[in-house]
Image (cartoon, rainbow over all chains, first blue to last red; front, side):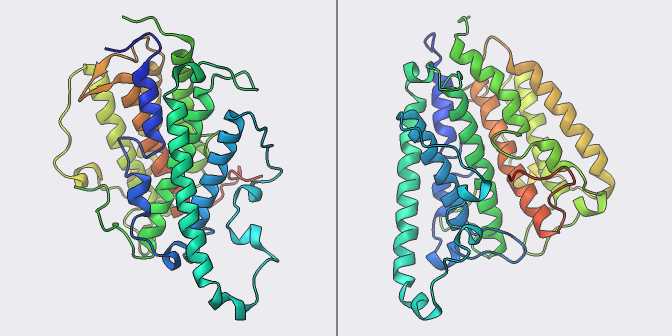
Length: 181
Length: 163
């Protein structure tokens, strides 16, 4: 039994951030991936797993900012929403001598990125279950459920690409198994 | 039956767009355009599926979902994931695209139903099932773009999703 505001719809939207019922979950998709593997850009593709997670996290943080009334501001170009990618790092590369020494720093960055990514995913999933908040309008006059569901779709679109990249670099399925049976 | 509230109606209006992309991700028509049957059937080295095979899989699940939605009867899940990956060759490409758009048109007839909260299948509601498969579709369209990048067939003439 559901109430008039449709709790099960909100539950469904909430679960979509984690992968939904029809896909492998984000947690599985990132499981068992070393910093080096995560940062590998396969030949012929523009992004690594790290780049994609940083991109999805960029938009998660943006939406949370909007929800929290922080007015995060739209980006001028798509590149700005790819904070970890080579395009946005152009001209900012570290000298080679420092790169080995920064391996530890990169590992810490990858762990920090995953932590903030999963934390903000939780925060959005909580918003999705807040009936009164979902029924409010955003600054564009849309019910909050609309951008929230769209952003979940954006995340899962890129989740599919993470699986493909892992297949290409020989790190799929993850230790706990993928989504096959 | 529960009368839909404005939030549910907004969700219902969003569903067809979730199936088509265009806002949250590259639109499905752009994703399938400007790709020859030969290109669509190329399986890049190191990957298990071609664009045609990915689309055949998307179609398989959409047809499965629609069977559940339209008959109202719970459907068993296939015994093996492999059962949901039909063989697809260059000769199937045009048919697969037509089938996909026909399936989307059928999905559209259900997204505006007033009973999205009604139970269907296994412990789900109609709205949940429709949302889950919208995002299953999105998940594999993300992979279609990756495969197209690998075979140097991206972006299409109409452009990708960058600005």
